[in-house]
Amino acid sequence: MMILSELTAGYDRQPVTRPLSGIIERGSMTAIIGANGCGKSTLLKTLAGFIPPVSGHFRWQGKRPVMGWLAQRHALEAQFPLTVQDVVSMGCWPDVSFFAGFGRETRLRIARALERVGLESMALTTIDELSGGQFQRMLFARVLVQQAPLVMLDEPFTGVDEATCNVLMALMMEMYMQGQTLLAVLHDSERVSRHFPQTLRLDADIPHWKTERVRVS
Image (cartoon, rainbow, N blue to C red; front, top):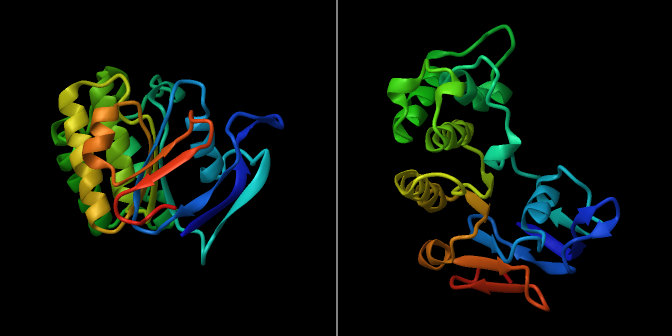
């Protein structure tokens, strides 16, 4: 459980969001929505621990969970001479000894993740050859192999084709049903209303929390 207490997100001590207070329950699935410039991505990066709060604070009830992170597509460099399999394998590094390398179970986990996002035939393709949708599927596969209790996604559907959006949304629903906690910055109001039990709207006079299953308050 994540507890927010008058939390304000921003940069260089300049607030971008209004103060936020509420609870994000373990196992919930929350969309952070609102107009451009209202601080959605800034808030997500603050909750992920990448930037400090401007004011207020948030805390975990119990131990901070391991986090899976999917950044915005334009925030990543595609020119490194890496293969799709290389990038997906990065999600396993925290669990692997430097000297031991990947065991059979880990290699199978990577292969399953590639299959689930439809990239099993492109494992050895270099990432500069990927389309926008393929690149996003690869990044999502890296999140899948982490099997993290908490997953944060910053605009996962921006700039990708509808088929990729549908694949990724199905995987997100599967993760949610398995008990993982998901926080996602989104723009597609129809997809949000159809799939997300909890929403946090930031561009209202007072940030508005909405839940259908009493997960966020």
